[in-house]
Image 1 (tube, rainbow, N blue to C red):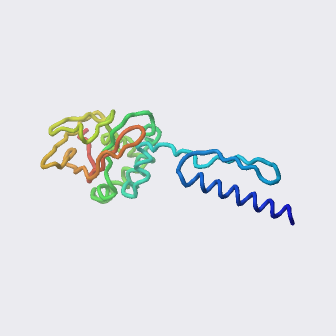
Image 2 (cartoon, rainbow, N blue to C red):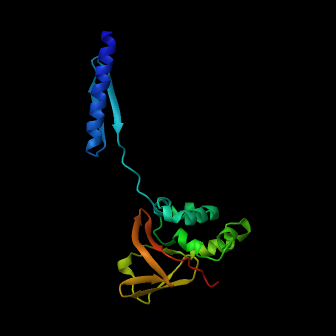
Image 3 (cartoon, one colour):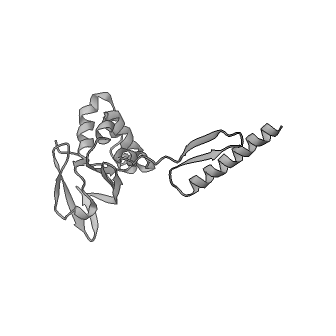
Length: 186
């Protein structure tokens, strides 16, 4: 009975130390000498890994179609690479606005080349923050063609698509949310 009480007391002390360490948001190692003379070591709250641009998109409920397309195309590893990359990310609504059957057709294995061209047309090498964009500026995509920036009355468009959220920063680049799917000419 006395051993059970000592074990419960040790558990309470360890739990209290753990909650105290967690409450300040720091990573700490907590050592508590239990009544049974055993020492308990516990790692608390390891620092979170920084999110890359793919993780930024995965974390957005408005980009599930884009994430599915990038995954189907096998571009996840590329976009998780060192970069840096700038991604103009169309929302689910942007994909829905395409003609009926377009998305489904692009996700078929036989459409791999077309899907690759479309997806890489939304990616620019380097980090291009909103403050860096200028009216009339051309930015070259990984697909090879250029996108044109327009700024009017403080509103930014990329090839006519409105930028609805800017500078979502990841560890390997930046994401700008757009309201349309950009289609390359080639």
